[in-house]
Length: 428
Ligand SMILES: *Cc1c(COP(=O)(O)O)cnc(C)c1O
Image 1: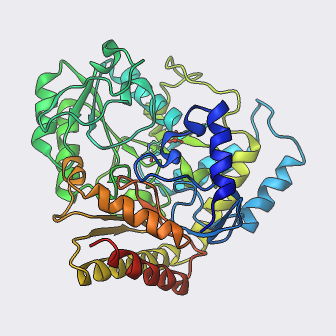
Image 2 (image 1 turned 135 degrees about the vertical axis):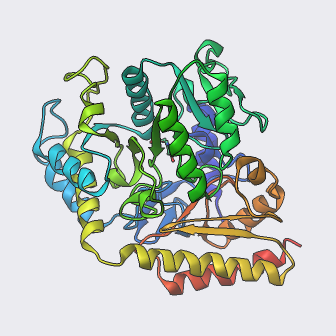
């Protein structure tokens, strides 16, 4: 596959953009090679500037559940764009999208829109701290909640410990309030509570998608809820990825546990920059202008993003069995990959939740970030490169989830599996 134009474009980008990218993973650091520069997308496919076509299992990292350049979404955007891009004043579209979300997520009476998942989580944490009057928060190693200061704390040891920042520029004074626990390990959570003078909230991805796909176990979620209730801490489900991906009700389609707050992003913007956070009326009443906890945004709830989100959510609600079909296709892909790997004597762990899927080159089932880290990253990198060269676009890291969309057909999946057969054969 010729990618000479992308190679040149990447060199040029590196002259004026750090690493040539506006979000680090796009630079292909962990798999090597040059990232294709994209010209356009249509349905299941993306086309790069050299004219190569890719079957896309990334979909802008989740948002594009109806595929690229979806006609409905694009039309909805074009319609509102003609009347203006942003007003910084209320529009009815905001109320419409808010009520769609509120209707589908049980514990939520109200939502506030922001412009990214990072902002959504950052604001939810502030609200939790404001409501409880406590500073400490508990997060899990391997869960990603955006790049705001107090959440940019990652893997420590297995034991709960006060977090140290995982990036220069993040003051330790800030991250000392972030306590780290191990995913799916309730004892590590209890230790955090024991170590703290007061925990405002526990935040997690109920279906983790940022260490590869690692769902939280039902028993763990139930125990987590109980611990939070016992200590008066709020439970936050970060559903920026799993919201409208894992099911129409996000992770809550897979668990009976109800969080106190939920954060959203990705799909609710239909490809435009959007985030949101929601909770009961009582909790949300603490937010400005009703209450004292400040949060604001010049472009928050702008009509373009709201229209794209509304077109997407309305259709997700209307199309019966959509998630069942997406899940069946995701299973077809992961079951196929697993069978091919096994034929070649390669251990592969796979998982599916609605339209989210994941696979690890790992000997054992992955339940936590430390399990995920034991995956064969070199093998993953080779697999990724091989598939990319055959026009199959998987996420460029072992620690990312994959996504199915409505435009990918069974036939396309079978083509991807045929290519995977050859690539797996070259990995041994
Ligand atoms: C993507 C993601 C975020 C951050 O959202 P951005 O829009 O990239 O800021 C936060 N939490 C989770 C679970 C995510 O997957």
